[in-house]
Image 1 (tube, one colour):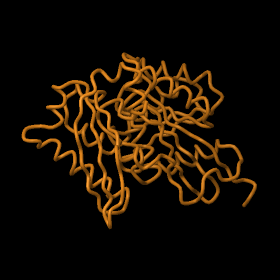
Image 2 (cartoon, helix red, strand yellow; image 1 turned 45 degrees about the vertical axis):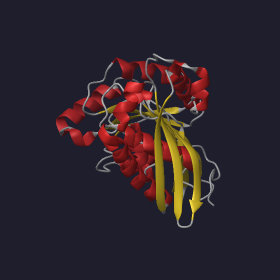
Image 3 (spheres, helix red, strand yellow; image 1 turned 90 degrees about the vertical axis):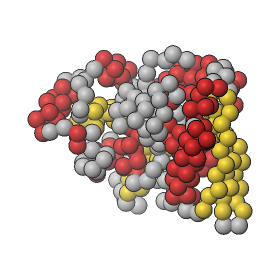
Length: 294
């Protein structure tokens, strides 16, 4: 292997909904981080590994930094900061279709303290015209002295390769960190729980996103089928009714949607059994948070 081989860790940061998870998925070419139009979707730090002949970029997916209102929120912010301090290169994601705001300035300030190389990634470029994009690139460039400013669209794939080139250029010279066939080190059960949670978030009203947690209780192979038993936790009885829906119609829809995603992930047939349970105010209760994996 040539001495120029580079390997290291990178992550995307930004306020909630800046397109970080979608970007991670586009780069790796497979669904690893869950995406949703609801802010604060990501709760676990998921590593996605991008293999290239001359480099290996390990992407760490973090929740969006936000002003915490619960114990869960505080823990998520701590998780973000501890991740930032351990990576080599950071891409600050700012959407092309939204003005640079207070949240972006706040995060830029937080990043200034770190030793990592920081670049700006202007996301969602497919949503604006050239003139608007040009104006946004100037505005973003004025936020800080970034190592680079790269416009991308995760939806169309535009400039994704360029972004990876730029990021890997800032990685240290290093031997390979992960084996060739590995694209994530996240246990399957957690990925599966995240896919169920993503399906449960689709189309629910605003009061639910933070209140949903999913735990895979049991998973085993039986013949050619993988059987999965999972519990969907909400905080109140009224939320349980929303998730289940009239005559269990919503729960069936969640099951069908997530089963297809899980089958694609595992590459085999899946039997999925979902139950909705109430864990009162779990986001504020340290014992419940531990039980649900936070």
